[in-house]
Every structure is written in C-alpha cells, then in structure tokens.
Image (cartoon, rainbow, N blue to C red; front, side, top):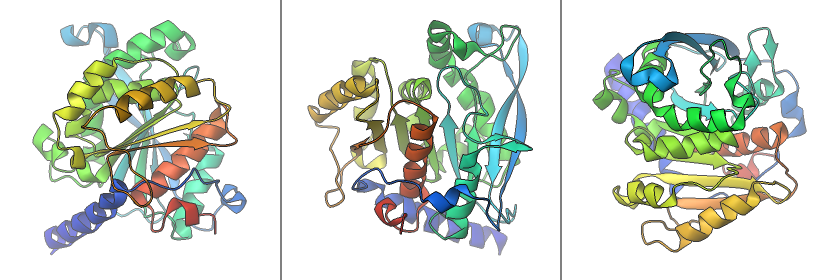
Length: 319
C-alpha cells in the first residue's frame, strides 16, 4: 500500500510541476505577515556529507566533510514523499545565507512556514548547499575569482556526492539514489541560485543537470556565460521537458547580463518564451523594486517556490 500511495503522490506532484509550461505574470511580493513566526513551524537542520576538495576532486586526494542547511516542513513524515528544492547562495555568503542555521534561523524560514500553513505552498524539502571548499582558506566565495572557479567545479560533488546523500537521507521522490533512480524523479526537483549561485545553476546546467531537474531558476546572474555551450545542452533535450525561470530586478547591477542572455535565448528555436497565457520553456521576470541583495533573493525564491509547488498562481499568493 505504501508503494501505491507513493506512486499516486508522485503523479500528483508531477502534474503540479507540469503547469511550469506557463509563466507567472510578474514577481509578486511576499505577504508581510509571512515574516512573523508561524503556528506550524517547520525545522531547519544541518546535513553533513562526505566529498572531496574541488580542485583535486578527480584524484580524491583531500577528503572534506561539508554541510548543507535543510528545511523540513511542519509535520514532516518519512512515510510521505516531498518535492526537493536546491537553492544556492551568492558571493560573500555560505549555505546559511537564506535559512540560517539551527537556533539562528533567518526570516525566510518563517516565510516558508506561513506559506505552507496557509496552503499557498505544498510541503517540500529545501536544501541550501555551498560551492565553497570550506577548508582552511575559510569562506571561499569572498574571493570572486575563486568563487567563479569553484562554481565551475561544483558539478563534481553536486551530482556524485550531495544529491544522492540528501535524497537518500530524506523522503524525496526517489526509489533509489543511483543515477537512474535520481533521474527518474527529475519532475519533482528544482534548482535555483542567486548571483554567483545563479552562475552555479548555469554551470550545473552545462554539466548534466537537465538529467536531474526539470525547473531551473537562475536569479540575478551578473556575468556573461558560455551561451553556446548552454544552448548546445538545451537543444539536446525535448524543449517541453524543462523550464527556465530567470529573474532579476530593474535596479540590479546584474540586469544587463540577464538582458543579453535572454536576448540570445529569444533568437533560438529550442527556447520558447512563455507567458501566463502562452506555454513555453523559459520566462524572464524583472521585479520593479529590487536591487542586488538578500531581500531580492528571498523575493525571487518565494516566487520560484510558488511556481514549482504552489497551490495557486504566484500573483494570487499575496491575497
């Protein structure tokens, strides 16, 4: 019976994800009351996993124990399956950027609690990892050039170590954590990141993330990328099998880069721009009050979650 129930839940959540063929109308604000503590709080916990130092990863020379921060919804029950969301921080930050840490939670944890309690979001698991090496050099993303190099290498540990470790430990939509088992659950998985985290999302996209994720949410990506390689990856897949939701703000210093990225996407046959009324496989939303900072990250992440696991359109989530 548990197998049948899990299968029905998988179908139900996959159908929810299918509406990602249409775009939200706009970037919606987070209701002010969502920042207050909820009567049905989820929990934030540390998750440790084993990996290898990034620059010598292929040689397995320097083992590392790394930490991700995980959000579990109120009433989390290992007998049920949950969609999983991976959200990656930007420069000068680490895995605690969005949710904080146990005993020192940040405001976005209250936002999640309230949105789930109010029925705006389905209960889901959120994972905040870091591309930082977390070695004796300290917080590597303080160094922009080093952060860029680490973001380019992060795919090694992300697919081989982090993804199977997380989804083996928590109740995700997987039958097993082999590559094939993880790929089979891609409909129920979202990958997002802000600033240098958005760069990391695109780097993971370049290195096979389309096998593991259906929804990609790069937010405020402030550099030019290997567009030809990204496009080559995209056109190798059924255009209806993935969706890219790009978000930025009109006061964001990264806006020019996303403007150019989207201009190039609009030229290609394998990308089709979606609206609230027209299906496609990517959308570009610009907030009319956002710069480049933590509040923008929260706003975009909230909208992305409403898009991925919302029970009603994001534009209605403030009502």
